[in-house]
Amino acid sequence: MTVTAALRATGSAAWADALLLSFAQAGYVQAVPDILQPAEPFLDLSGEDIRKSLYLTTDASGEELCLRPDLTIPVARDYLASAGAGQPAGFCYLGPVFRYRGGRPSEFLQAGIESFGRQDRAAADAEMLALALEATSTFGLTEVEIRTGDVALFNALIDALDLYPVWRRRLIKDFNRKVSLTEDIERLTLATAPGRNEYEGVLAALAGSDRKAALALVTDLMSIAGTTNVGGRTVAEIADRFLEQSTLKGGALPRDALGIIKRFLAIAGDPDDAVAQLRALAADAGLDITAAIDQFESRVGFMAARGIDTAKTRFSTSFGRGLDYYTGFEFELHAKGNGAEPLVAGGRYDGLLTQLGSSAPIPAVGFSIWVECLTQAGRKPGTGSAA
Image (cartoon, rainbow, N blue to C red):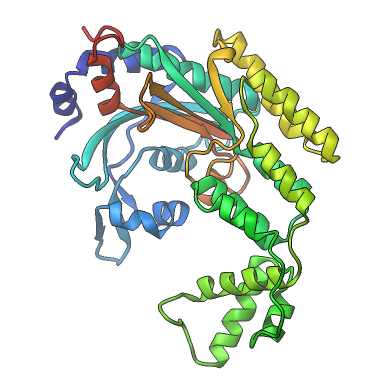
C-alpha cells in the first residue's frame, strides 16, 4: 500500500499534509529512508526479542535484511551517510513501517521528527515536546495527557552510589526495559548464603569485574572445555550469570543505598516540585547528581518558555519508555483517559549514533507519531474536531 493510499484509508490525508507543512515551517527537512534495511542495527539495539516482530529476508551475500520496523534508525543511518554528518540537522518523516502485531495490521503509518547534532540539549528537548503537542493539535486533539521522565537522573544516581559494574548495568537495563527493577533492588540487600559454591574460584576471580573482562574469562574457560553453550544458554548469558553470583558473593548493597533508590523512584508530580525533592535527596544523601538535576531544571524552563504549562505535565523519576537507547529526557502523549497506548512518544538518545558507527558522539532527540492512534482519537466525541 502506498503512503497516499494508506492515508486515504485512515482518512488522514489532510491532517498529514498539515503535519508535514508544520514540520517544514519549523525547519525540518523531509526524509524518505529505504523500506528495506539491514536487520543488524535493530537486533543489536533492541535485542533479539524484536526478531519475532520483524519481517526478515537475506540477500545474495548472506546479509540479513528487514522491512523497517520504525523510522528512527533508518533516518539516523541516512544522516550518518550524508555529507552533513556531525553537523546540526533536523528531519521529519511520514511513511509505512512493518512489524508483526498479533491481530492488528502489520503495516502501519508512522510520522515524526529526529534532531541531530544540537548541543543545546535542554532547549532541543523542549522543542521536541512542543512540536509533538502541535502535532496532536493538527489531528484535532486540544487536550492530551503529558507524561515525562529522565533516565539520565537515574543513571546519575546509580553512578553516585558507586555500585558494582554488573549491578549498575543490570539496574539501568531493568529501568530502561521496565522489568524486574523492584525485584533486583530487593535482591541487592540479600545476605550471601553460607557454604561454598562449586564455582567458588571462578566467582572470586570475577567479583567486581566489568562485563568485558568476565566474558573473556568465561569464553576462555568454555573454550578449554570445548563448550559453546550449556542448556541453551549462550556464552554471554553464562558470563552474566557468573557475574551476578560473584557480585552477590562480594556483598550486598547497604540498606541506606536501597532507601535512597526507593526514595528517588517515589518522586513524581509537578516538575518544579520534583526538582526541589531531587535537590533535597542529593543533599541528604551527600550525592553529587547536581549536573543531571540542573539539566532537568533547565529543560523545564525551556518548556515553560515554549508555552507548555509544566504544572499540567506528569513527571516521574520511574518513568521510562522500555528501550535501551534512551539516555535522558523521555515523554509520551496520551489521550485523556487512555492509559495504555501513547499517541506520540520520544526522547533523547545521545548514544545511538555512536552505536550506528559514528566516530564521535552526536546528540540526538526526536519523537514518533502513531498516526493510527491519533486518527482514532481525533474522531472520538469530546476530543476535538476531526473535520
